[in-house]
Amino acid sequence: MGGFGIALLPILFVALVFAGLIALLAWAKRGDGRTDLRRCPRCWYDMRSLDGLQCPECGHAAKRERELFRARPRQRAQRGATVALAVLVPVAIWFLLPAHWTRKTPPILLRGLLALQGTPALGPAGIPAPRGGTSYPNHGWQNLVWAHDVGLAIDACVMHAQRGAGPLGDDEFADLAAKLAQMHDLYNRLQVMPMVDGWPVDRARLRVARAWQAARAEHGDADPRTIRLAWVLSEAQFPGALYDHRPDWTTTPDAIIEQALAHPSAVVRQYGLSRLSNRVHLSVMRESTLRTAPGTLPRVPAPPFREIVDQIAGSDPDATTQSRARDLQSYWDAFNPP
Image (cartoon, rainbow, N blue to C red; front, side, top):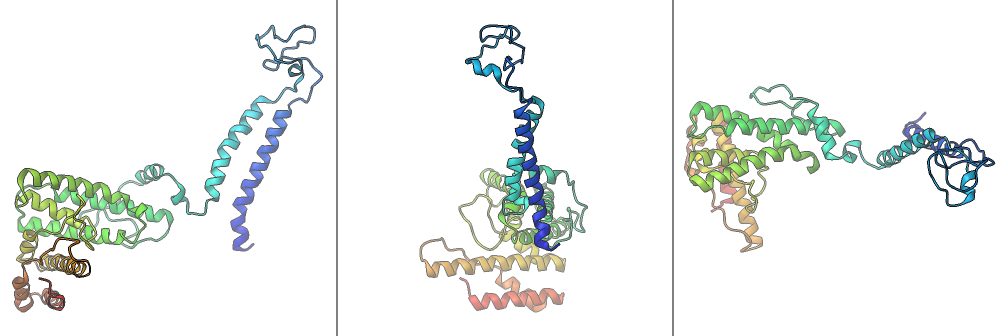
């Protein structure tokens, strides 16, 4: 049998079950078929020797004489068939909707199923590693499991990164930079998924956004706690635009970039260059918007780290770091943001 025939089998099965239940309901409603006996239509007490329409057994009073000559239905079978049909009809409609089952299932049920999956094993950076690796699975249930695991990874990373309150030390910075870089990569991969699959990320991002806003209100933007939270929040979002009106949107703080560029670890310096590249890109994109639609948005100045980038490009002991700094120089010069 071809693929089309195989696809029809579930539909034929549902149709046969539906037809069988209709036949069972008709048979149960017909009952014993006796319409020649005078009986109470509620308790089926024999009223052939009695006058009147009221049953002396249960007290039910029929409205018309002909009600006493009904066939006695098979009530258990009738109730069972009715309940089965009440369940089958919405299930059949759900089944026939042209979408994958994960798109037709209420989110609250999907979240319950995902919660049963447990927590994935820890990855190299010490945060949960999505089952199936870092690649987007691109099909059905695996999409949701992967997105769920990404949400757990981001949540764990955010919880770890926002614990501290004081300035970042070099060792802590290196550890957090590795975790946040992995988290940032996962979140960017998550963007290729439909937004309905991205809900696990919102919990962590909104939580740190509220903490960041509270720290700003209490301590100001220069406080180490505020800077740390702004940094973590900037990692838990897509860096392709500036959404100034949202409470869960920020950019990597200058203090974090400056500390990363001066860090003794080449990996962290490369991390700082990548986040500085994002900042320069955002500034360039904002300037492009202002040229096409003047006055629509406030100007965002380019970050003040060009001299540091030039130093790294010319004298950094690590060749890869030097190369990345030169790439940033080329981009910076090509677009020349103010």
